[in-house]
Length: 233
Ligand SMILES: Nc1ncnc2c1ncn2[C@@H]1O[C@H](COP(=O)(O)OP(=O)(O)O)[C@@H](O)[C@H]1O
Ligand SMILES: [Mg+2]
Figure 1: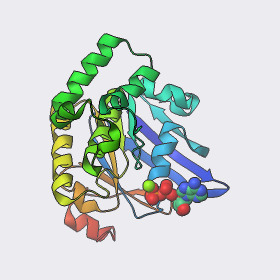
Figure 2 (figure 1 turned 90 degrees about the vertical axis):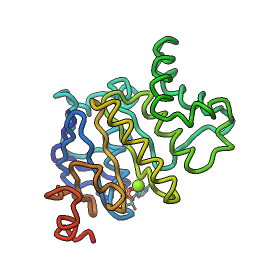
Figure 3 (figure 1 turned 120 degrees about the vertical axis):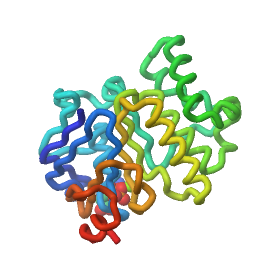
Figure 4 (figure 1 turned 30 degrees about the vertical axis):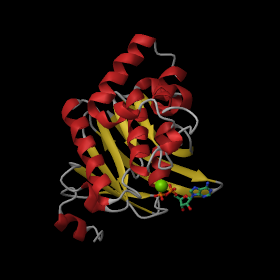
């Protein structure tokens, strides 16, 4: 569904993605593992159209995605939760979640339908919906960012280091929410970046490692033996 071939990108003349080949199949959960500065955020931003791509191609359902303007890409069903979750603190949680749908000018019934689906996956947000986002804990903010990505991402969701900074009990709760999402919406593909591969073990069926902008597939996924072979533990 999402196929990346030979993708290179740069920031201010510095190459941050180097001939990246990457594939995400319909409904798959794929991990992208790499240290700080490896290029994880850059790859997600290139998919969203926020990076200067210097070579290569991205196909979405066979269609050349680089020809789609960045602000048109969410309309294809691509949701993105950036690592800095960027909630508007004076808006309520629900206003934050609705925002991308309103930007896309989805009709009120469709927005209501999507919200219902989101609260079914993330019931704790339903209880908080009318609170200002400013009062959210870190864990709740991650849930709200996931919800906002779900509002748009009915085909693919890109999650940038969602576990970063979460205490273990909240990380477990977040992982449980992702499992619920996968069970209730098996058609949605998930691309999750992390610096710590153990967080996504037993979760992602495929894994890629990224280092200095170069991506390699980890044979055997995130099993302990393949991580060792890939020099990741
Ligand atoms: N705004 C920026 N200006 C200059 N260099 C940047 C900027 N953002 C990221 N970089 C560089 O791009 C490379 C990849 O960064 P990034 O994609 O953010 O990595 P990751 O998400 O894996 O930590 C790093 O070498 C980083 O220093
Ligand atoms: Mg990053």
